[in-house]
Image 1 (tube, rainbow, N blue to C red):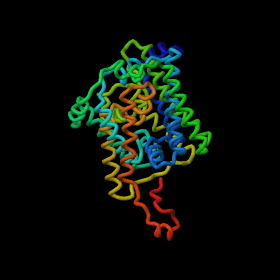
Image 2: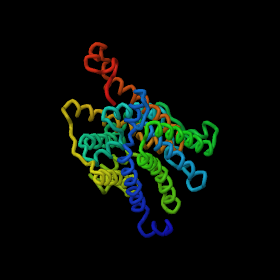
Image 3: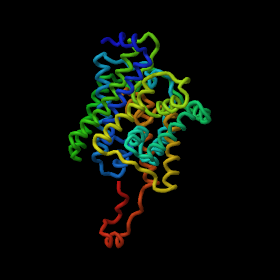
Image 4: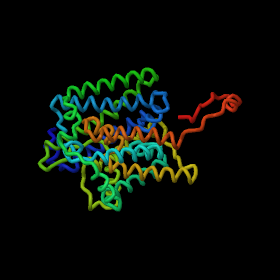
Length: 369
């Protein structure tokens, strides 16, 4: 059935919402099964033993880049009107927001997408952190923290269109972008083979990135078939989490769109995977100290994500797949902040040689991953 016919029958909003639910459910299922997590990948990387967690993240990222750029080269997709490219952006927001998000990600032991996925598996720590993050994001968008966010984003702005398109800045085309994606695929394949990543995890990790590309394609197709202006977007979690929270509290202020369907879709997909593979388990906080850590980290992620214009997935994968300059800056800052925060907060002191020998451990062996 033609997209125009479906939109005429249901309307743009409901179609976008249903699309968000479908894409979100597939993403949630794949993310739960692959254990996709930027926080876990960054810790593995900075600890110097690159293995399955890095391989999963690279597989997802590379797949998103390759599929998205392939759609563009086949004239199936045009992302020039996407917010990350067309609108005025902020490099100061990308840098500071990325650093805040990366630090918060380590403190809550998961990025925004991972918290949502874990919430659906019964992790109450992740559920509380996700709710706090959504409140902080909404406050940064329209509430008490909005003036601070606007001040920081105004420090170093960048024009839209070509100035935010990394391919234009570098003077290369989408064919080069596809080649870059294939190089990342080769790296993911290398680490996956070396770490003996199961074939099923390869497939689901690729599904995570594939859904990012499908999100871009779906919203673009609907925008072309719709008479009303429709935003081209893909998977992201900071803004949609805040929007979903406000939708639950006050439906009269919200409109049906892709983002509104995305968050419940991811939750349902992850819940289905957890129940199907018998991995649903209620988990809570160990003590008050750990709760404080999670809450502070969630606030950093909520504010940082809105400041940067995207989270680890929204900027790091969705924005990275269309080569938005600010998205790549945000992603780099998230990685740096994650490594530094993990070193400062979670490292264990080196074990003296005589103590290590008595305990049967190797000297200097730090914390477990």
